[in-house]
Structures are given as structure tokens and as C-alpha cells.
Length: 342
Image 1 (tube, rainbow, N blue to C red):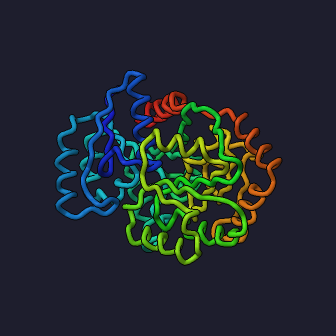
Image 2: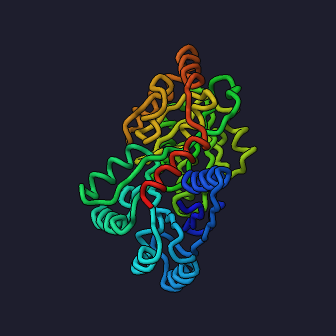
Image 3: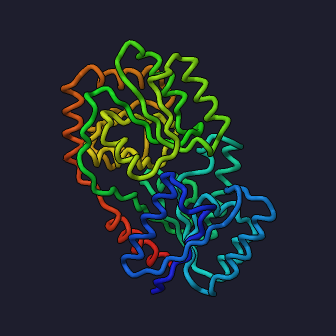
């Protein structure tokens, strides 16, 4: 069995989204298990880089020693185009599927789904980060597709959140259309008569136009002073945000997993969320699930926790009792999947 793994990253691997954090934590846990992880940052606007960046990617990949194992992030795998032939011809290859291109909310969904599955068929295997994503991939690939596995994110051990008296809401999400922040603001505008505040933690640079729309919505709904956009923050500041939160709210139109949901549950924080892959492994008594796109339903769920201290405490206790896997366990599952494919 090889213990050298070349991890192809779409751009800077230190980015602080759920997908990049998953990559970094699995890589660190595999390293602790004796693997040599070599991360190759491929420049470009993935999943569709320009020609010059694709040539740089080709050169970086060509330098990887023949027959050593390659793990490609699913965000870049379809965009490699003909470079995939060279990778698959020289290496065992697995693809890590965080999400699905057609679910990101832009472009021809059917065309993107076909491109992504055609690319996946060239790999020796694939790993999805949630059971929900794996079901979609298997359905699309059909019986002749390469084998796949599921390795959910781990959850770091953390103290139970102290909270802030029941009125502080937290949303951990980048400001992109799929994350539904504008819908969340629409829902909260229906609750202006309640005493609440919202902290939004996540990059504002991935879609600056959308981030500007979110900022405009705060003014449009008269929520200045109640909603704070913190942008991307470091671990200590993020932990403080979790510790101060009374409820985590998540309004994404599609969420393959949702690491922030599991991190909240691991700290005993009740969750209000639209459908997400993480909900399959979280205790149902700790989560109020609402339909994606339903602002009034989202408002009603949040309101129930703002006004009912008993319900919020009950959900918090349920969350605190959850037994969630750590990153070491996730790394063991990841190692098992890789050795089965390669």
C-alpha cells in the first residue's frame, strides 16, 4: 500500500470554507497516521480555469512521480479536461466530492451534471462527504460507475456553548447565493418585534456582488445594528462566536453536508436549518428543519426558539448529548476508502 498521497487543491489550500477545512483536517489526521501528504495548489478560477492556469496545472501534475496515488478535489476535477487523461494514465486516482456543480446555482444544471459525472467515470473511485451526496452521485453514475464511499467530516472536541441569554443567532456561511443569507434576512425582517441579533461569519470575497446585495438587504429590511457581517475569521474568533450563540441558523438552498451544523451541535447549540447532508447524522431533537426557500417557515422556526426558553433548553440538551465522530475516526474511514479504490 502506498503511504504517499498527492492532494490536488483548487487554489490556496488554507482557505476557510467547509470544503478546504475538511481537506486540511483530513490531511493532518492522515499525516498523524503515517501518511506523507503532498498538497499541490493548482492556480486558477476553478472549476473552469483559463488556458494559462490549466497549463500550469499540467506542469505541476506532470512532476508527480509515476504511479504515486493522487486525490483530486471534486471542484477542480471536471475543469482539468484533457489533463485528466495524463493523470489517470500515470496514477491511481480518487476524487473527493464535496458538493455537486449543478447545485451551486449558476450555469446549465443538466450540462454541468453530465460533465461532472463524465469526469468522475475516469477516476478509480470517489469519496463523498455526506450520504446524501453519495446517493446523488451513485444515481447519476449508474451501475457501471467507479466505486464510491462516504466519509463525513469529523467534529473537533469543544466545550459546551455558554450562550447569550437566548437571543443571539449565528450563521456560519460564505456570502454566496447558495447559502441563502438573503432569504435569512427576509425571514428575520418578519421578526423585528423580537429582541435578537445575528452574527454572520463567512467570506465576503467569493462573490462580492452578492455580498453587496446582502449588505443592501440589511438596510432595506431595517436591520442595521442587529445583523453583523464578520467576514472570514480565525479559529479563536470563530470559537468565541459559537460560545456566544444561542441558536445556529442555516438557510442554504442546497447543502451537501454543512460542517457548521455539526460544530454547533457538538457545542450544544440548537439548530434551525434547511435540508443539509449533516442532518442525517445529527440528533433530530436538536434541529428544527424547514423547507429551502421558505422565509415564513424559517421565521416561524426561529421565533419558536426565541420565545420558548424551555424548547431551546431541551434542544440544547439533546445537542449536547450527541456522540459525533472526531477527525481521527474520519481519517481512518478515509484511509480505508483509499486503499479499497487504489
